[in-house]
Length: 608
Image (cartoon, rainbow, N blue to C red; front, top):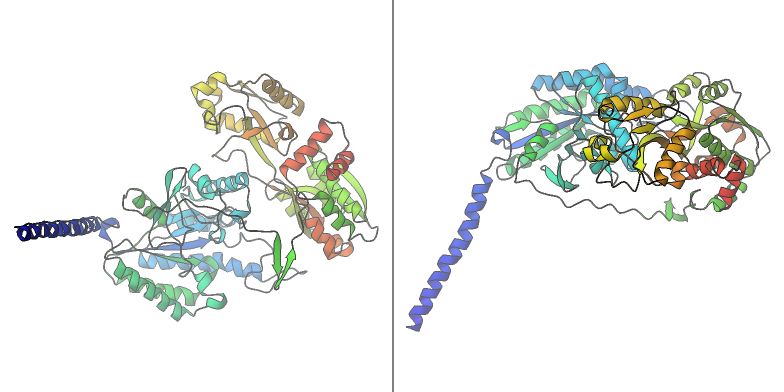
């Protein structure tokens, strides 16, 4: 009897084990029958066409040796090849094979080549975001980064008629804020993730943000240069090998092949290799070429997509730097140790040459100029300060009546003035004094869940509590022009808001009176400004880009004068004058509210 019972138990366990094994296998097979791609494609190929040449910095040497002191006459032509020959040649290739690609467009390149950008979209290709300039996203603050994306998207939409929904960062490197900003601005995907050969989701603000993976190994800028340089024939074979394995894997899992081509690298030999590859791939059944926005929209509808962990950013240890195998202590920046910085400045004291420093005649410009003057005097220079408004200062710089200007707002606000000066003399940009921008703000005691962006001003509960008079400054100011347009664009007049022009004192008084009484109030303001030194003012998000962009406030110097009377070490220290909106706001406060002169405020600030 015991033997029979044992046999029965074993039999039951055997049946159960078969059930446990068979059911998961059956479920897996059943799940695998769900299409990985539209029309049950076996492999999707997505090609990126970079539209970025001519937007590079003027000093970018391209593939040529760096020129330290001379004008580079050849590098710009190497980049121009991308627009003259590269993009048109690639467009003909896509037409030949009847495929659509994604073009990652730099906003400035679109501005400089509008007809070509428009043609890309006209032929059915995707216009995707790639930043406004070649400035790395990881080097930007959150506001500057957001504004650069808004500016770029606005330009692309204005020129091509299409607003981008995808994004590619400079060399694929993000800041910690990039994905959050993109999602808030309506983007649905990015490509800067090399961790998979298929699309995936990355959680951003508890929502799914699509990754349509980019390629490093199938990227012409990598494969045709440096230590990995390949000939066209070898690159073709490399693409075929990649394709063959991914195509085989595509029978049982979602597979995607990504290829990247750059405008200036689209030479005849390289495009011929790509032509041969596309022909090779199209001979295989169930191979589809797709734009990345179409891929992202398909993936958003699927439930069998891998999910990545939340991205974690760790800051590198910058306490030491390595130069040619030697570890050296990195000098402390000005703001980290002002006294130490001045000691370094004093150590390079030279001849008592005269410098004429032009300063824009507004309080926050005056305190910035006073910082520069103090550093120049510590170097041993005799400094004459001349004050004027923006346009006059640039005229003086052009006519060599002044040697340097503190501060020029670039590239937007004063870019036109700078270009005019450069018709006559060469200029050098040094340092980063602050990052000016316009804003609408509210006191931080107003809950952020009630109001975080301009459109929240239309909420009934906000309309009920908010002071309806929005007190601005003079009619000619940028913040006033922006604010008047925002009143119309957001329909704020319809719910009772009124924008009033006035003086800076009236704007400040209205804000401080409301804060004193803990009232809800909006202040049209800018950075840097002395109110930020006293109050916590929260910027409201403005996704339409009506408040302009973030500029760089820099020291603009006559290059000839700079090289004539400054030593390389002195120039390096002038370039290390890196301040902040907060620092300038504090100095501005000291002169506007504490009654100090600019020189007194700067001396006290350096002594703190």
